[in-house]
Image 1 (spheres, rainbow, N blue to C red):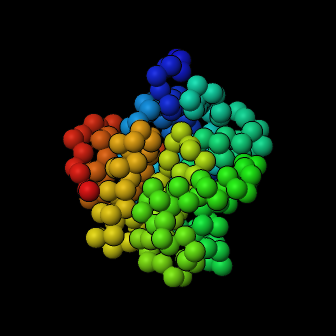
Image 2: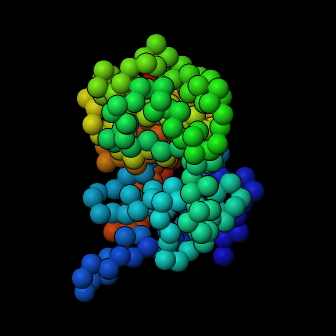
Length: 238
């Protein structure tokens, strides 16, 4: 049995997640064990239905495994209550999605401040930290713009700033370039690489080999199983 290593940020041991679809049982994730160290940039790949999204949902404490164990920064989280999982998500994990998930009527600044509302941060601190996060992604001058006034790449930068604003241990990105053109995708991947060089641990789900080549490690899933765990020399996007 794997004991949670002191130097790891993520350790999952024999994670399994099954879903019932009518009379059938779908083995979405089947006996997966993996460790991620602080500061790694990991790409998660696989065809549709391979288990990569289920794996991401479990890492993000958005779902619970049917069996297996999961440690995040030394805390075993797989068996926590819904309230405790929500607290872990807000404190320790930043999320970036393909569709940006920005509030259309709110400014970039307001969108970035939103996670801090749930964290109980004072209004003055929310503004200060949100402006710093927007500055970190190169959008300080667009703080007052609404999403409809921003390009797709700029909207994704706002979403990344929002994910960073609570200083998470882990940044989870689910197909973050899927809605972007090639040039803008490279800009976003370059931003992820710069954040990673600052020490932020990143786990990124993608179906695009062109995106995965910028990570230093690639996990390949198929039929709910982890079939490859490969280190590589990451290309530099920016």
